[in-house]
Image (cartoon, rainbow, N blue to C red; front, top):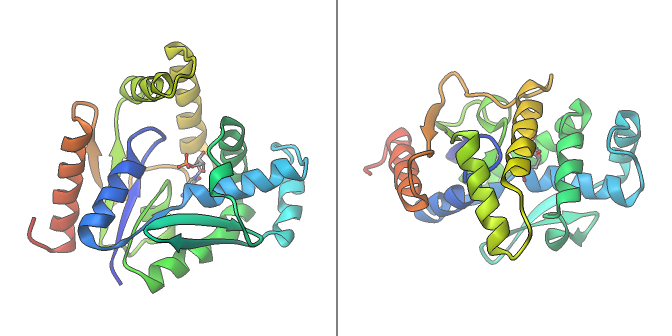
Length: 224
Ligand code: DC
């Protein structure tokens, strides 16, 4: 099986780009953030405080998470329930971020991720795919953009959805998440030694997709 790891900060366009890349290569797209989100959701449902590390660790024995494919689409199952429609709220994002800093949670999800990469050729997106989950992946792309550009994209998305948004608040929130993700003790967000950085600050989505497809084909040893 072959693997492309796509890591990078929130808002760099990882999921849209990774999805297109998977389609082009005929690989399965794996969004690993959804696994952390499912655990975040369970923590909220059980009323455990998201800063209560021991409480979260205690919940793991009650949790079974699994990724299945419904057509081309990834669905996350939490104890047999399809929770795909419930994990994209702001509350779950915060909970996912908190649980992802707990080493026991990361260890708990390791095998699910590696198992998928053993069974399928994957484009896997996350924060530590190239550094921890699939260190032998042939192709590791670190997708990034300046905080201001990522905040502007997020702000525009919120307006498009008809939600109220404050650019400065979006930017501050994003910078805090960047800091948390890259300074946590376990599996911090960072460029793998053999990773290739792609900065999309000055690229449109279409240009970013084209660049990533060319980069991936090159490192997989295929003709672009
Ligand atoms: O990519 P996302 O926003 O859906 O991820 C949700 C949270 O999970 C995010 O705060 C970082 C964390 N995460 C992680 O620590 N490692 C991954 N491989 C994927 C996500």
